[in-house]
Structure formats: structure tokens, C-alpha cells
Image 1 (cartoon, rainbow, N blue to C red):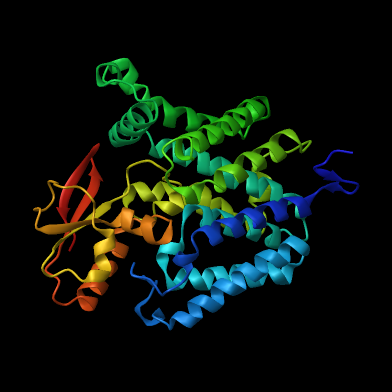
Image 2: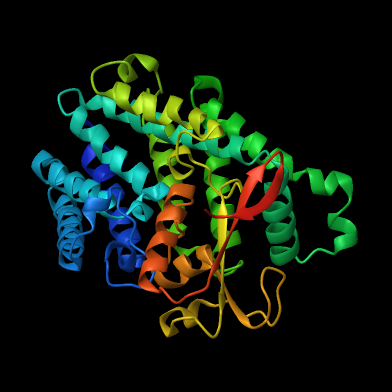
Length: 381
């Protein structure tokens, strides 16, 4: 008997257990992100949602307990609803928790809940979430900053240690544009029977390469995406190669509450290019398009709690050597093992909180935004 199929058809229990297992691992790795007792600011969705740290802790424990319970009782809808409720409330209490993997895991489980009466519809919904993520992730990478910062600086220089004379050759350098293009085309390929298996093989290999690049044998960076990049090729393998008759058809996606998945993953990411939808909610993964913020603080006025997050460079261009330079993304990684949610409104809220918490801090907040194929420096207001 096929390992991925039960006597009654597709083994939905196995799929739910896989998702919950890796979701549990993700949350344990970045456990500090889900608590409020930290230096990195907590940014609730609304100002009235600043709550005691004990509430953050209770929601975190409830979430972990629900994930463990679903490993034992994977078809229990009540536990699934408790899990998603705790996750939703927790993410309202801190917008930095809406990580790309969190958003995806949330709707994986929601797909099983809204299709509990027609469970076969949950597979096209999950497949659509995957295919749309790959498509928009690929599209977001087709830009000059990605080619320079990710393809050239990380892959060619840091990982492969190639010489500048070779990497700046026009053919080699501009090959970086093909990475996003191929990923987007392969995402479309998942929709069609003739190309589905080729696309499936591509994504399995792609995730293995991501693990090599960002894992311990590569640049050893962004540990929070490691489990995600183990789960996703498993899901692709199960759906594409071990599920007879699997397809991502629009008919089940247009039925009932599945329309919500169609809209959120198929349509809303387009709005990101008009500044109306989040980067993390639009699968802008390693694209170099989201904004960045640096904080320049004179050492004479800096609070000692911020000192561990100062960049170790002896000199830099953003502020003088008598100041501490904090790169917000590195700060988030160092303290929570996750990136910050790179939205300007969130950066602005962080700035307001820091100015209230450290009133004597004479800091400058430097914002870099992606504009017309370049990173443009401005000041965070």
C-alpha cells in the first residue's frame, strides 16, 4: 500500500501532522518572537492591544499545545480552531509575527477547516497556496537589487567564492534575473498536468539548494527558514508525485470559503506593487525589495540594553564612529531569530516606541526603500 494513501483514499492525517510538526519546530526556534519580554519592540496592530506580557505567554503556550494535540488528533476541528484563534490573536498583538511561513501555515490548516465537509477540496487549496507563493516569489526577484545583493554578493561571492573579474561579466551577472523568472514560470507549471511533474522536480531541487545556500554548509544564515524548506519539498512531493489525480483547478477554489484563499494568495499580492499589501503576505522572499531601516545612536546617549545589537564594524558610512549603528534586520535576527516585518508603518511604530522608551536617545532613523530598480536612502518619519 502507498505510504501516502490510506485504505479510504488520501492520508489527510499525515498531511496535517507534517504541517503541524514543522510549524511547531518553527515556533520553538523563534520562541522569543512570540513573547513580549524582549528589547526588540512589540508592534500590535492597534494601539489598544498593548497587553501584559503574560497574555503573550499564554497564547504561545496555547498554540504549542494545540500543535502537539493535532499531532495526536489531526482531524479534530475544535483543536484546529483553537490553534488558529490563538495564532490570530497573537499576531494581532505583534505584527512582526506575520512571517511568510506563519501566514502560509495558518491557511494550510484553515483549508482543512473550511473544507471539512468536502475534504478533497483542501488539496487544490493547498496546491494553490504553494503555486501562488512560487509565482509571486519569482516575480519579486526580477529586479536589479536582488541580482546584486543576493545573486552577486551572497551566491557568487560568499558561497561560491568566485572572483570579481568573473562575476561582473555581463552574462554571469545578468543570469541572476533568470532565477526569479524560472521560479515564476515553474509556479505556473504546477497548474498544468503536462508540466506539473517537471515543476515539482524543479521546486524540490530549489528547496534543497536553498538549504545548501543558507544552511550550515553554506552561509549559515536565516535558520528560521530551514524547517520551512524541508516541509515545502515534502508537500510538493506528496501532492505532485504521490497523489493520483491531483490538480489545482479553479472550481473548488471558487466554492465556499475557498474564495478567500483565492483572493488572498492569487489577487492581493498584486497590490504589493502599489504599496497596498504587505511584502511578507505577498511572498516577497529574498527579493531585496522590502524597506530596510538603520538606527544611528550616539554612544554617549545609548541605553546599555541596545549595545549588544550595535554593528561590529570599525567604520561605516551611515554614521560616525562615535555612534552605534543598529541594522534593524540584524537586531531582529539576533534577538528573535526572525526578520522584522518590513513595513514602513511597523518601522514608524518601532521608532515611536523607542523614542518613548529612551527619551534621551538622540537617534537618527535611516530608511532605505526600493525605487526604480535602486535602493534609495531617506529618513524614517
